[in-house]
Image (cartoon, rainbow, N blue to C red; front, top):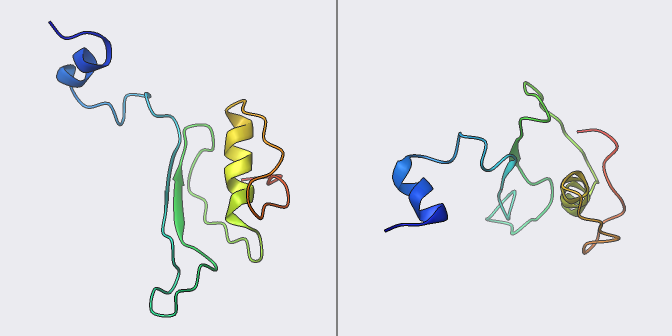
Length: 90
């Protein structure tokens, strides 16, 4: 007899039922031929952020986005890697 999460998996897909909330997809290299981890393309899906936006943040570490997302989840973080703070707007 399945219990808890395994029962939910058997009931159907979980991705769009609100179980995940925010989804971040990012690549490790912007130009894999040159091995450049600068200006990384990423997609952020979140019901809290709305949609229809294209933002470009030159010179801002990706870890600032991670700190902002963790802060929105209620996880206090002082610093991550090369972060310089949180993002004021998304």
